[in-house]
Length: 114
Image (cartoon, rainbow, N blue to C red; front, side, top):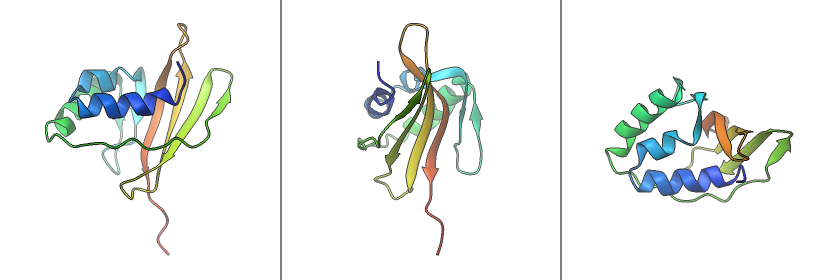
């Protein structure tokens, strides 16, 4: 029931190989900035993408959330990526039942090259 819960649920569902469960964390018309350099739009497309990704049985590690910013029914969540991808950020919206779903997901913010 908190925006931060989505990251934990993402890790749990991904590690269980549950692509439909991962996709259920997104709004119907969500935008995922993945694969790198591209976008995946819509819950069904996100589910199909995660079916392919999870077929390789990757293992995801929980990442501690950075402070969440909430304005009304919109929240910005983020974590520092353990895999060296820089940071991750998501925009979530509170649903009528009080739960939160991702509407925008930027899973990789690589630090700028120096």
